Length: 446
Ligand code: HEM
Image (cartoon, rainbow, N blue to C red):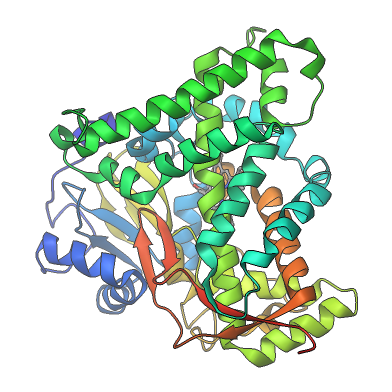
C-alpha cells in the first residue's frame, strides 16, 4: 500500500466537504458508467466543492469544480501538494519518475526534464510525425466505420518511441511496441486500483503476476537501450529524451543512474501516449458530428491558416478533456471553497466540471470552436493540461502531434458520423469515447 493511501484520513462528514449519502460502491459504479453526468449531478446538488466517495479511497476524494477552487488546487502548492497522490501509479511508471516526485525535489527534477520538451526542440519532429501519419493513413481512410482511438494510439506510441527513446531500428521498435502495448493496456493497469493483496504476484495467471511479468519485459528492453546508448559515444548529441537524460547531471554534478532514467522514460510513455491519442479521437469524433464546424475548419486549413484548428482543439479539450482530473494531497488541515479539508486528504481539480460550468461557458454542451476565436479564456476556466508548477511538460509535443495529425488527415479526407455521438467513459484517469470514437472517412472530392 503506498504511503499516500496509508495516511489518508477515514471518512468523517464533519471533516470533509458535503457528500452524497449513496453507498460507496454505487457511487463508484455511477462514476465509471457516466463520469461527466454523475459528477455534474453531484456538483448541482452539493455545490462547487464536494466529496466523492468512490473506491479506492478510504475517506473521499475532495473535488473542486469552479474556476476559483480549480486555481487553488492547481497553484497553491503549499496547501495542495502533487506527487504523493499520483504515487498510486508508481508500480507502473516507477517511483522516481517526475509524476511521482513530491516537492521539494520536484522542481529540480522538472528542470532536468524540460530541455527536450522545449517548443523549438519539439518543432524539429514535425516531418517525422508527418511521415508516420502518412504511413498509417490508409488504415483510417477506408470508407468504413473506424474507431479512431486505437489507430491514434499506435501512432502516438510510435511518436513517443522516436521522440523519447530515439528508437529508429525497426526490430527494436517492434519489440518495444509489443511490450509497451501489453503493459500500458488498461486491462493491465487496472491492477493498480485493486486492493493490495490482489496486486501481488500470485503466479502467472493472477492479474498481479501478469502485471509484474509485463513490467519486467518493458524494463528489460529499456535497460538494454540505456546500456547500449551509454556504450556508444557516437549516439551522444542526438535530440531524443533518452540521449538528453544521459548527458544531464543532477544537483551534485553526478550523472543520472539507470533506475532514474528508466522510471523517467516509462513515466513519459504512460503520461504521453494515451492522452494524446484520446484527444485526437475526440476531436475527429466531435468534428464528424458537427459538419458546419468541420467544414469551417477544412476551409481555413485549405487557406493555409491554423486559427480554426487551434480553436477546434481547444473546444475538444474543453468538452472532452482527455485527463479527467489533476490530483493533489492536502498538506495540512485546511479549507476549500469554505469547506473543511483534512490533512492528507486527496484533492482533485475536476476539469470536466469547470469546463462545463454554464457560468463560465454559455451553452456548455455545444461544440462551438468559434467561441475561442479572438478570445482569451479567463484563467483557470480551461485547464486540460493542468496548471501551476506541475502543468503538463508535454504540451508542445502533444500540440504538435494533434495539429499534424489533424492537418494531414483533413487534407485528404472528411470525417463523417457513424451512429449517435459516443458517451464518455473513464479508464483510470482518461476520459475516452465509449466505442473508440468511431468515424467514417470520405476521401475528399468524392
Ligand atoms: C493531449 C495530450 C495530453 C494531455 C491532455 C495531458 C494532460 C496532463 C495533465 C492534466 C497533467 C497533470 C497536470 C497537473 O497536475 O497540474 C499532466 C502531467 C504530465 N504530463 Fe501530460 N498530457 C498530455 C500529453 C503529454 C505528453 C505528450 C507528455 C510527454 C511525452 C506528457 C508528460 C507529462 C508529464 C511528465 C507530466 C507530469 C508533470 C509534473 O508532475 O511536473 N503529457 N499532463
